[in-house]
Amino acid sequence: MPATVPTRAATPRNPSLAADARPWSAERWCGYFEGNTTAWLSSPLHGSAALTTSERAAIADSIAMFQLGESGGGTHVRRAAAAYVARGGEAAYVQALALFIAEEQRHGAELGRFMDAAGLARWKRCTTDGCFRTLRHTGGLERAIAVLLTAEVIAQVYYRALRSATNSSWLRALCTRILRDEVAHIAFQAERLALLRRSRGPCARAWRNALQRVLFAGAVSWVYSTHGRCLRAGGFPLRRFWRSCWSRYRMAHARWNAPHIQHKLNSRNE
Ligand SMILES: [Fe+2]
Ligand SMILES: [Fe+2]
Image (cartoon, rainbow, N blue to C red):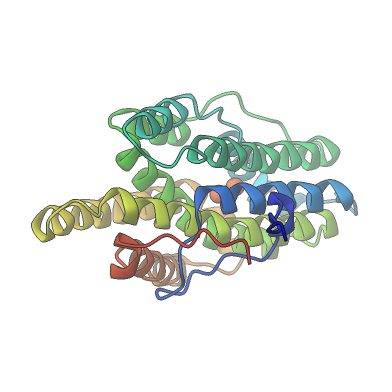
């Protein structure tokens, strides 16, 4: 009797950020991202884009910066992923990364669609986006993922604040959907970072973790200084924003330092 081959699209179950959860293979991540694309396309977002004058003032610049950040093409990280596969990494990782980038671009496109409806101006460039881009471009795949993880973890708090900063039903629904995706993005990046660091010794790993904490502290401070008005409007004054970011960082950190990920990949499509 021939074995049943599971299809990619049959794996919509959400990934777990629990430190002891089994990591997914790149093939399984492809299935997740493809399933999520179908879910997005089958239920397009709509609702009220109306904003009061104070809501508009609180979010206009902030949402423009995040919209730009979500819209990048990922040229450098794609190249780094191809080099990783050429060195013996999982072949399907290039495709999984491409689907991940497409998902981020969808966030950018959906934020842009909302901004157009609300009459908010889009931006073509900004300093924050330029800094993140430069940091990602200064190293290989491991550094690019470490920088991406920094942005993903902060986004987990930012979109909560943005959701609460206005009464627009459209924007609130969009933030809820993006937040769900971002949990998966952190799992996707943290698992790969753990795999990339498995050959490193304890000192090298501790050094990289220390650098990553410095980067994260700087990024959280920078984001608050540039998005403070939106964050406060959404109920995240500095102290709460700082604590929320670090509590999510610790969760992601436990995932990319999980010892069992260093050795094992779960390729089952269950
Ligand atoms: Fe995103
Ligand atoms: Fe993301």
